[in-house]
Structure formats: structure tokens, C-alpha cells
Length: 177
Image 1 (cartoon, one colour):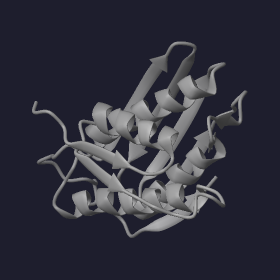
Image 2 (tube, rainbow, N blue to C red):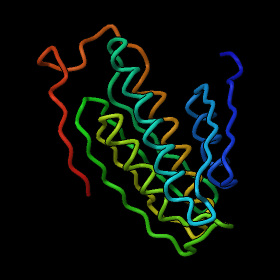
Image 3 (cartoon, rainbow, N blue to C red):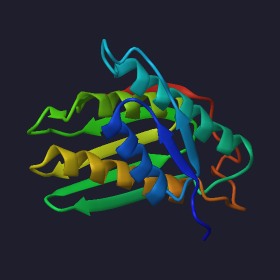
């Protein structure tokens, strides 16, 4: 393994930290420079970053077969999170997390779901992101992003096998919960 090239530059420091954790544990090269109207709310910046990241994941599938499925459970101190991915061309998000603290510094934890939804729709993946438990919202969100990185690593690894028993991945469809 070679050192990863990770450069994250947004004005939302906690989000930077989460993207770095995801990229590191997913062994991804990731270069993000994003700006937005964060003086109003960082919602659009986080969502738009998820859109672009999802589009990048979709391009990986277009280059040839990948493992398609990936999953990871990651603990961090008091928290345990799990992410399961199917990169089979159907967008679906199941997000299950309940946080004791709604803000981590200036970051609203509701934006985690917005990021995951944007990735799911634009990558056309079935994404289940679950925080099983935790007391510290920082630990909960960070374990979720690390699990997301690990599941991406597994799902998007190149494969010589077909991605579907049908020989092709089905047409895209979407559903969110």
C-alpha cells in the first residue's frame, strides 16, 4: 500500500475531519476543495460534496466490474456504527442514528444524513448507515464515516466476476427512507 493523497479543504472543520477519516480508512485518494454559503448554513456545501463524491463512485462502476458489496462495523470508544453498501445501480438510503448532542462544534449532525443521501442517489448505491449506539456524538459520527470508508474499500475493489446473476446491473431506480 502506498500513502494516500488526502487533501480536504472546506470551511466546515468537523466535516473536513470526517472526510479525512473516511478517505483514510477507505484507502482513497481524495482531493476536496469546496466553498459555499456557510454563513447561512453549511447544508448545501455538505450536500453538494456528497453529490460530487457519489458521482465519482458511480464512475468507478462504469470502468468495469467491482465487488459490488461492502460492509463494515467500526467502534470508536462508546460508539459502534455499521455501513453496508450494494453498488448495484439502485439508489436507496436507510439511515438510523440518534444523537444525544445535535451539534459538534458548528456542525449539525443532521447533515450526516444529507451527505449520505446525496452520495446514495448520485452513486446509485443501496446504502445502510446505522449507528448502533453511543453517547458522544463526535464518536458516533466518526465511527460511521470510518465504517463508510471501509465498506467503500470492499465494495469498489476491482473484480473479475460479473456484478449480477443477470449479467448486467439493472436500470437505476431510487427510494429513500
